[in-house]
Length: 150
Image (cartoon, rainbow, N blue to C red; front, side, top):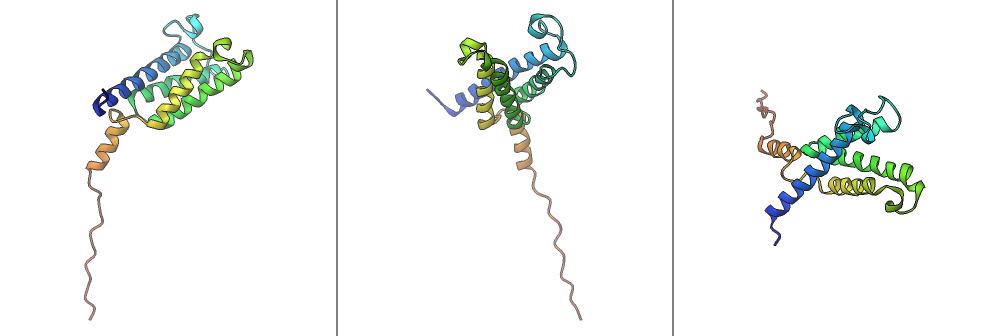
């Protein structure tokens, strides 16, 4: 049974979980939290290309998607960074993701592409801002009164 309410809740949970997991990758890479970069307990060296920048994208875009603020641009950037990771880092090691260790970047790339297409949904900061803007009446200039010329 699919109802609009169930669809909204399911989309919210999908967006939040994907955003949270991506944010965790960023926290590990940028700050060394949650086990650090690749389980070392250490962060990636600041400015190291491409790892530190990927971690920063993961941290910021993951948090934005999680909250639903700037969802589409954040998801596009996140999807692109994961596609880059797949094709540059993993794909040269083998054709299929299961062979080259690229399952996670491939899943993130496609998940974020879906989020970019669908958007944040009705339970997002984007929707809250959109609804508040729609509720505020547009401010118009007062009409100029016609002056009689003699």
